[in-house]
Amino acid sequence: MGYTTTFTGSIRVEPALTTAEAQFLLDFSRSDHDGEPKAPGKHCDWVPAEPVLDGFGFATIEHNGSEKSYDAVEWLQFLIDEFLKPGSSGGPQGGLLTRDHVLDGVIEANGEEHGDYWRLVVKSNAVTREEPITIWASDNVQQPVIVPGEIVRDQWFFETRR
Image (cartoon, rainbow, N blue to C red; front, top):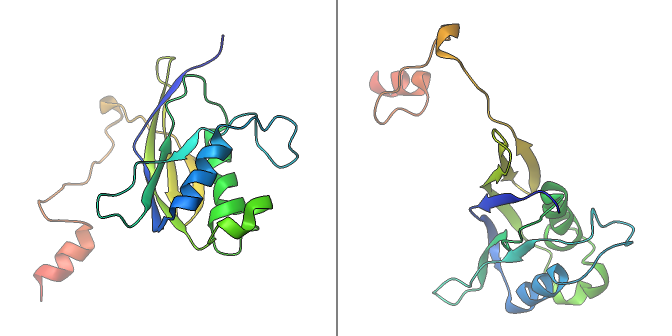
């Protein structure tokens, strides 16, 4: 028994992973890391996605679909810090890894319990868990008016005055 969380989406890797890096991460995800001092848990469920069609490497990382997945945020940050980002150690397989990657993207996470919905957000190699905010209609919270093409109200106003 355990808890199931479904992950949807992928994280962009720039520059794309080489074939050797993708194979290393795939092998790493298939290994048992129980008892390893820095590992956040027993199994890492983040893997390179299929290679891009233009043949320039593996441009995204995604969840492997494992039914019981734990420490998702910690594992992704571990992979970035230990193997992928500039200045990372590369671990024992350091020679296979270019250690020059920047990761960005959003993964939607949905747990099996009602209301267990969150996002895993990666911005310039920093991984965070983002919880939704519930706003009740009866709270009379002022919602911004969205105008098509508008990104930020002040920016839109500035641009229309030129």
